[in-house]
Length: 118
Length: 204
Image 1 (cartoon, each protein chain N blue to C red):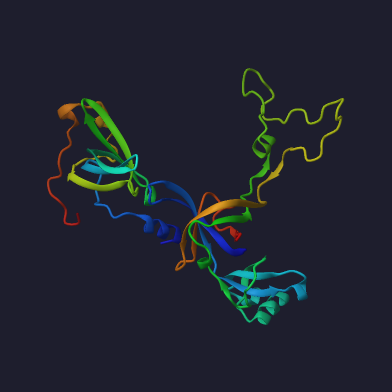
Image 2 (image 1 turned 60 degrees about the vertical axis):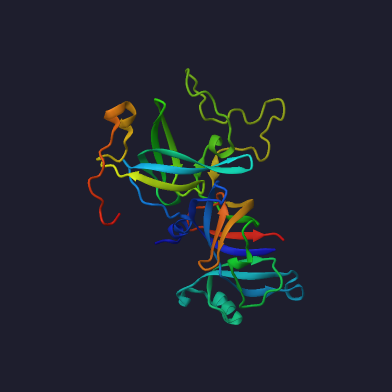
């Protein structure tokens, strides 16, 4: 490992591993004035990109009939915690096709069994 | 003043505690060995000569250089630079431990070579319209009017070689120091490509 990667490794956070297709709840720290509170954002991970400290993931949810997508930096200290609610079984790295789908068509099959490594 | 020599490793991004993302350049700096101390009596000015990056094959050195290292009683180094520092002895090591998070430094290095460039890239001239039949695209235009000055001013920016020159970037913030790996994390971009040797200076 070169020194540059070693530096990035030191700034990485320990987060539960998840993948595209999983349903996650991201607990985001929100600063209002001088108070800090935690705001959850729950949805399906539809894309992940980058590596090291630059890694980001995109979460999509449908809120009151309107699709909402948010991109989170994985190593950001504003993310308090990432909870994995469901493991999805998908065959694509980017689930942008979900944007055009509604209701049952936008459902993702759950993974049948958990692998020992997870 | 505190000075150190280093090598640019590359850039990355790190988060601060309050969630802001900083672009940082990682520099492998030091340990630099003091090879010579210049004094007022002997040389007319005060400075120390620092060496960085050890030479592996001593037979590659020429006679004057190897004599200098032998006199100082230190291993030979590839990069030598003088810094106006005081209170150091020959053989002492200057490490990144002299720098702290939050310090402001200026960094000097040789910038990336750009080759022969036109005035738009080299001096930010506006150029002409790109289309509508314009045949005046990237040219400099008039460089000296006819009645006054009726000649070209000195230092007029014209096409030529760009880059590969000594550049100093001032007032950069140190966002991290790793003494066990001899690393400095400096906010922002530094001159040169990866592997460029840099002088890092902190005024006190």
